Image (tube, rainbow, N blue to C red; front, side, top):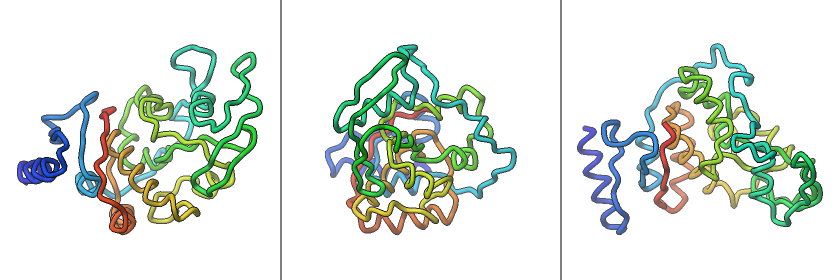
Length: 222
């Protein structure tokens, strides 16, 4: 069955003139690049029930300064996503600047009204496989600057409305962002080799049925 799916994916990507990169467990691993139409990528995610037993946000050390440049992960995302660049002071203190929050289609002046959201929330990551990861792997996930889709600056209100929910129970209030949201969710889950639960899979399939079946390119983190 797996080899059949691989051949189908290869044929689809050939028609799109996109280089096929195998996605079987034997052919792909950390650092490898996967390219698949998003609906195929969704179908490739293993389905499993979720279990939040033992979850604590503290098990994902986050907002570290991995490159030791004085700016935490939060500050790095704010600097990267600013529409108008903020001023950067001592200790990477950011003031001024403007950001766009795609969840609710709003512009925000200054960083104080913003949260940095994990596209796939930490609790959802735990439910989807991270409970079995090492502490270092969870830290890497919580501070993932290697893929610009993993972390996003949004209004505090929209982030707190979303909380730990997946697309089965929460979608961005801005209708025009929902395709991007679903595609990005699938990309992040693919990058980290997460599982997906049946309700989440059904919700994403419904959203993506109305979206272009665009290819996603993902560098695997695990």
